[in-house]
Length: 328
Image (cartoon, rainbow, N blue to C red; front, top):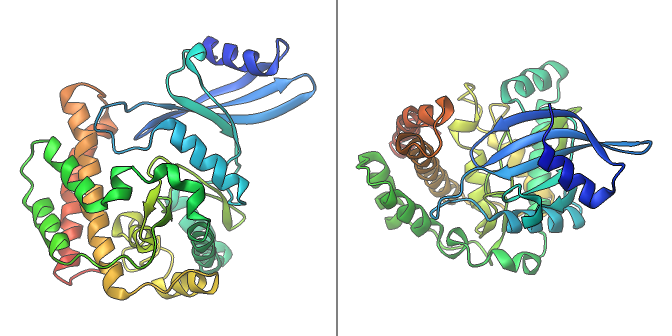
């Protein structure tokens, strides 16, 4: 199996003798179609990854592909463990919006990672790695990412969620309660807006030998309060069944926060963490509404998208548990 348009895109950039082998369609996820392939150029072989935008609605919450690529390229050049950007598709490729990066070996499957690091005794060290890496990301020069400043999430993260919720025309009391709770308790920004990954969690870390080999999926990157990334990481949704362990179902938050602060991050206030966790649940519920809405309207039908409709209720439950003090 291959793809003639991908072959042509490779030939245009690497010459007539370049070809692709070991072609594999990996996923059709929330915003991208992912293809793995080998670039063979003479005696050189390199594993690459193609990502093509699959959600193109005008109200998409995702970063435009050119800004995703630019954010990844900048972060890579500043020393973050990001898959090396290779090239961005253009109109001549007829591949839609997308780009190609280097392949990073490792594992992204949450439950498998949880089991493997627990077996190897690397649980605490991996969580410290999460903290150190996020501090490094948060201390990158914000001026290098000024092109993200006009994103709705950068301008006002809460208003961005409210606007998206309103577009789907659903009446969800839990989400509306969450939006009102957040509005009444807005924390002051803990400092100047800095780069946020926007989806910093287990599932977007490529893990190899008990450490992060690559930070993936930059379609939610924006500028804002650093505690937003921390609150998102602490969501029960990313504990994958190990609900008593606040950081990715691996250990408690102190391990992460100590490593984050030691690496140069500002110590987050507990009340601010709570606010951003509640924000995270509201945002995650609205993202699930988006996926289910696309399925119902017939724009992107599939079992995964349909299941998001059911998942919305689970996220709403977690939100209510958090806000009533019955879950961390």
